[in-house]
Amino acid sequence: LMMKSLPELFALDWVEIIAGCLIVLLIPHQFQIAEGIAAGFIAYTFLMLLRGRIREVDPLLIGLSILFLISFAWEMIQG
Image (cartoon, rainbow, N blue to C red; front, side, top):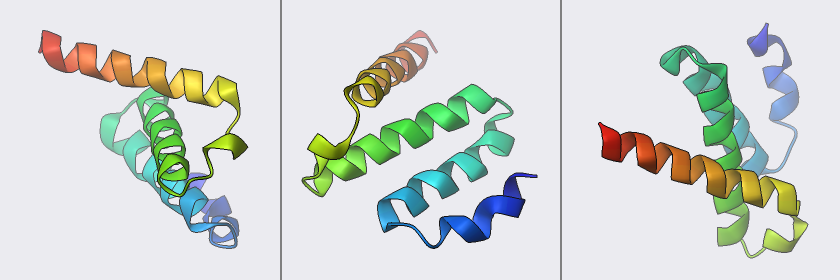
């Protein structure tokens, strides 16, 4: 089902392609939808920051990306 809309993804900007592919690859690898989507949010925000287009990213998405980063870091620290 996820693979059905993948061809539409390749008509977008490369930042969206990378973030979308990351989501599609990580959801089955991690066996958790939330972690795959969180990684995609973080990747999208980070790539937009690198391109100097951070003003185009919704502040809510930036906030969620920061919270997901803190959550992932906390999990790594806890082991």
